[in-house]
Length: 383
Image (tube, rainbow, N blue to C red; front, side, top):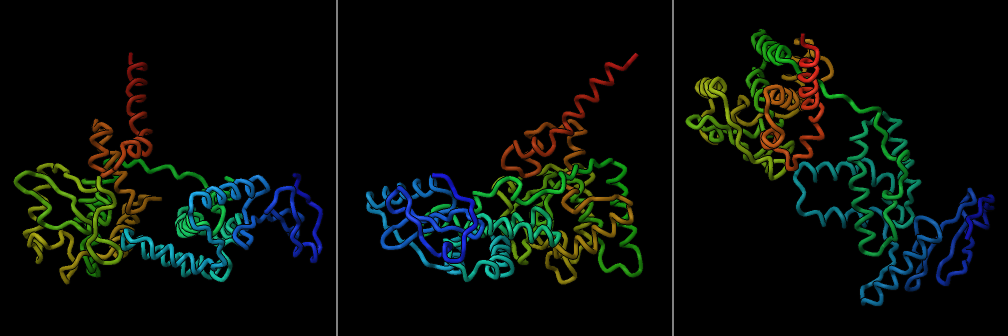
């Protein structure tokens, strides 16, 4: 059945029109498009999409009824369902739980909280994305805000409260738009040494509150994530074996937690120079027991993520004159050095703590390709 695009008057928008399919009706929106509903157990359930989607949902509901599943058209609000979904997420990491809670409280509940779960459409989600983009939020930030929204909608679909998740109906141009893929900075050995030297210079200044240069050095030479660095304890370093063991991370909730993934638990062999560096660092530390953090605050607790980035890394980067890099980019510096020295993808994936080698290849394949092609070009150009 074709969808009318004639403008609908106020009276028409409240009238429920029958279709040729029993139990499927529609109402006209202000722009003349049709909003379909399916009659189930004495109530109408709104369906995102057209007549075809309404028929598919009706068939699904009838199949569930035939299997004895409970069908319960819901008048619940988004806030009610979102809280049920949030309570069902029992295995979230503390920081992820905090982030979801923040997204719900700051963005999603003020926007959709009082609305019935079935009334939220893909157009509503697209409008929210446009507003967040207009406020200058990064693509990744917007995507993270949408995670609790998509999770809540999937929760509602699974419990037959709504027919489809409106987030899945967004077109590519409606989804958060990346302003352009940022090319990863390829670090040189000179830049690595310049960053360490800059951090050491800053630590020697009279107004310095802490020496962040050891942490920056270890980040550059081991590729550990920020939380893994802060969660490192002296008992994780085997001086005899010459190896560092990653066993935990220090979370933004200021507590020890598991590594990002199971592959994050790993062993990293250390060169003699770095073993000696750790040995000297431990001798000079006020906190040197096995359970003490390697990078301890003056109170003996792990350093804070924010202070490390803003007071340690960012001033050092500025002093070294390296543009457009973040703390996380020091992992890329480590990967660049390993690839330049002939480390293969499987080994690098283990050192980086990647669960899937495809992540390593997707992130760094251009460096391996460049290493291979550069050598081929040099051979071809030689006299």
